[in-house]
Image (tube, rainbow, N blue to C red; front, side, top):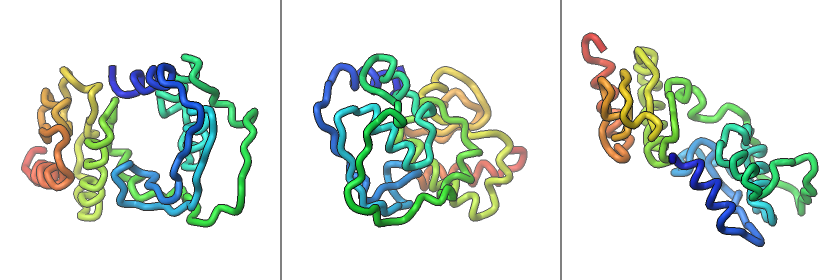
Length: 193
């Protein structure tokens, strides 16, 4: 089922009356942190879908690309309509603006992600950034596949147990960032990779 469908159905099955979101200091790249962005903001609302849509807008993410959000809206869990929403701001936001030049944007182009777990994906990003800094990422012959959507499929390069049928796979559920880095580095430096 992947992650998005269960999250969408969970939002329908467990109704919330009041949602509070800590947006004081987060990471726009992945939930394990490492690239903090101070926003000094706390959000509250009654519509979980609207809150997630608004959160996406603050981070410059198209909510349609966060698949559980439109799924949950279709199930009747809430609305994605920011224009029709009544959004009130109390006080001034103090903190860094999201510049659009996030730390991992450059390495995401090297990845073909299909329903990956956040932990697996979170470990992949710093490993790829390190390979980029060392000038090795440009030697990548194909995109790195990651996620549950690759189970039972074959391909060239994969990360995580879900890609165990690939020609080259960094095994683990999830593999650590150092494990991914070391194994990909060895792969990229081996003749004929």
